[in-house]
Amino acid sequence: MTDDVRRTVEAVWRIEGARVVATVARMVGDVGLAEDLAQDALADALAQWPESGVPRNAGAWLTAVAKRRAIDAWRRSERLDERYRTMAHDLGTAAEQEWEPIEDDVLKLVFAACHPVLSREAQVALTLRVVSGLTTEEIARMFLVPVPTMQQRIVRAKKTLSAARVPFAVPEPHEWGKRLSAVLAVVYLVFTEGYAATSGDRVIRADLAGEALRLGRMVAALAPREPEAHALVALMEIQASRFAARVGPDGSPVLLADQDRSRWDRGQITRGLAALARADAFARGRGPYGLQAAIAACHARAADVADTDWEQIVTLYTALEQLTKNPVVTLNRAVAVSMAADPATALRILDEELDAKRLAGSHLLPSARGELLARLGRTDEAREELRRAADLAGNERQRAVLLERIATL
Image 1: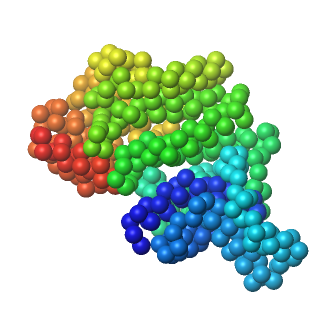
Image 2: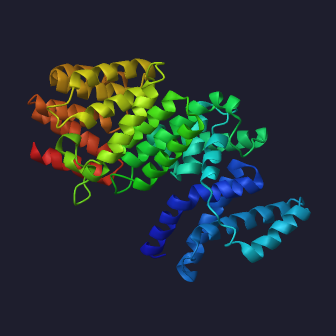
Image 3: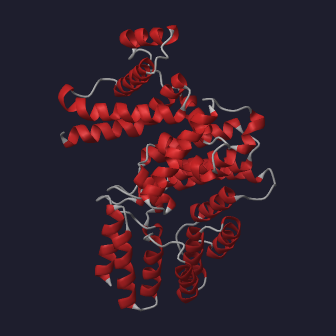
């Protein structure tokens, strides 16, 4: 297979994968089965397209192949009835014409995979798999768990949904309370992977981030009285406003302190601040997305690093840490402390996190410790920490930046 065809297949799956799964799920009524069938169709594409060429409507091709595989399975299991014969006939004559991507179908997929019959971890893992097209390896890296653990989690989630016969539909509003927090979590994790890719050779995956923002806006429209939905949109808008400045001409990541803020998208910042104001207007107190959006707003309003209200950011991170108990939040608080107070105080926070081993296996902690050690003049220790971070980094661009940083010490 040529690299061009492989890249084309990967691009088609990133763009169309969720809609293929959603369309097939609407037919078979089983999200897990639909994802398996779509993966089988993708395997067929990898085998056939190098010889036959990429179809004009690749998404329709994948959908048609996945549906045919479903019908074949029904035939084998002797469950064929008139409905299936009609579907098979239609597929043979009008498969491409029926490909009409419907935005709401992807959102239905998210709500179905976030069904309360699943644990929160299973909801998020399965939704990331079927909606974002992330590989199991990428999801395992996001959760800081071994790949086999994540594989088992996703397989169990599919079986549980199938056994529960979960309908492929957006639930009634009175049922949202059990699913909305998981839906918001999934949308944000998809955006996070798009904002800072954990693997591959790109810093940003704009397609993922854009899809997450689109889904987030739809959820906020569905639940207009849910402040955290508006806050999540605010957070994503403000974070996405920096995309043009986050990557240099050679594709390398550009740290916040070094970014050309004139390249930040002021329109997105305005929309983000307005969404945050809508969330705050409910006066129910800020949740995790509201706090993160408020931190992003502090950066967005500052002319440069020196102008940033770091004390306010430390306060917001402290509240967020108490709310989430997330080690990455602790790490970010330490970085903010290093700016508001001093690097020695921040290093003590990270040393406690090192002892707790909650971020073992992630490059984030040694990367942050290395920078603080460098600022304290402990150069040899800084090199050692940054080298450890480079060894752990899954993204090639991030690894290159860490190695370059070592060379400057």
